[in-house]
Image (spheres, rainbow, N blue to C red):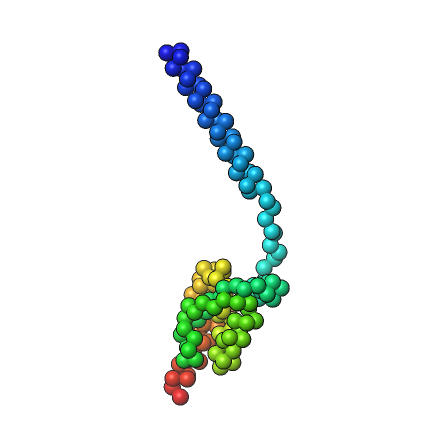
Length: 137
């Protein structure tokens, strides 16, 4: 019995050491400081894109239009180049520009499109309204 108890104590001690080493390794891996974000505004994403001018992925979260722009269209590039690519659609329906969002914020912005009273909901409904008027004429 004593030998069995000593073996179980040793195993527990080894497990504690392994667990401690795992925590130390995890701390070492996660010790890199993360970039702190400043206060976000309505145009934070647009200004960040202008500063970085790196290729990003954007998605159009508005309704399908008669200009050929389809809901959930994904476009890669800097914000300026994406807007230039969709220039014809944006010139015809300016609210489209506000419905082109970075894919990183898709979940938040999709919820805002559905929530009555938000700017994104207003832009979405404006696009729908303009599309209906175009069909009637």
